[in-house]
Length: 168
Image (cartoon, rainbow, N blue to C red; front, side):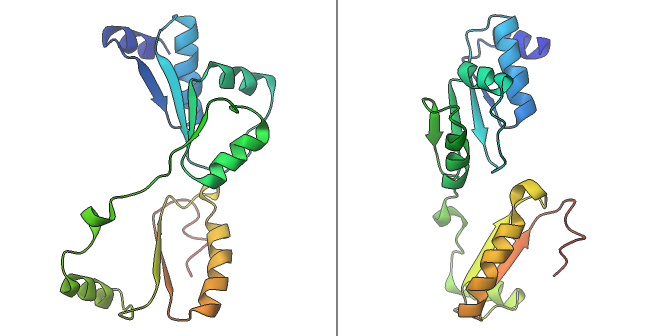
């Protein structure tokens, strides 16, 4: 907390952006204890229930904005009643043009390497294999997709504690 405050003062930091709960608390405590002018903003990436307790309500009041990266995260936060005035939705995403194969031949070669049919629907999830990432919900939904679109493929990319449990 002291290091956050020192760095914020030395660098004249105006916004402290946290991505995890622990970081959020540390930034907010640094702001309060050391009377920093910097605003604290939090981006929330996961759908896990926020406890609506006195400590978390205090934290919400000290936070300039909470950014939800999906509608599911936004709804989860909205249900608590906390952050109602400072909740923002900014979808996570990637520039598809920057990451698209440059040629049809490259696309075909990539599909061949992965043993995918040329026109099959392919979905990919890149995330740490952890309970908070809710892969189980994705896998449940994918069962319904694969029943209707038998050539469709789901590719999971990541590592983590649930790897051993989900080797299918």
